[in-house]
Image (cartoon, rainbow, N blue to C red):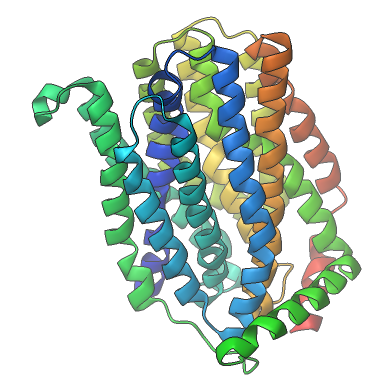
Length: 419
């Protein structure tokens, strides 16, 4: 159990970035502080482009570094390097001055690259702590601790923003900027258990030194060929690419959407906090639901809720309605992520886990290119944020259709043959 908790606590550590920075204060500060005086539609477009740029970089890197890590047996080292990059860049946001949106975008993109690339190796290390029978539970535990840990720090950050004088701060802006430093420290401290207590087993295929790089590229080429032959993996990755795009876009753009509708940013941040604490028990429940009804059916349930939520957002006219959205998303956000990860582990070979998770994260990040661009472009062209959010229904529905053709049993047989 020590290994399981040490692995899961990395989600507790880095979820502070996705909550406080990515979903919470960066969009607010970007619009109100770093893009001070800019048009609302223009700042939304810039934020969408920043998220898309970070996603492209990670998407290009993920399968390559995964293949190299598999050949070199250095998953934990890669995790350390990228986590350190994310920590340093996140803390650096504190020093960006008002109006300097370009520098804010650069640092944010680099921090996001560290966060997302580190997750390639975090995800692949699940094989070191869980077997096939416990995969749904362990995957859900990681996401649930992520929601709890991210929520605990975020609640402190929100308190700082709402009552800056209590902490001896000059105002809300300083409180929001100081939150970036706190995320960096939190991320660094709680990353220690996975680095110390989660083992990295050897496969007998490791290559020492710089030779692992060309051999990693050769293995990547081989895996692309294998993935094309593995119909189940190929179809699932396409389905995941489509529906997780909508999920990622909502995470990154929800607060910005609410601000475009004229809602107070402090109330939107509180709604985001509600999502975190609803997501903690809900992720565990969704993991159990996967065991009861089947992982694939549970994913369908989550997608259905997202479609309903997106349509509801089209008619949103009050902060109260935004809170309804926050609770609804909290019920399924961790579930669709953890269930997708655990489903994927059943159809890929363990010996190439980092590489296959590189492909998984690559498509996830390429998907996150499309969503923010759709939001940004529709908002820019129409000036109507409601139409931009409605466009996400197409992604959820398309992902559900492709998922229908994924045969889990066939995938398991193919994975065993490749071991």
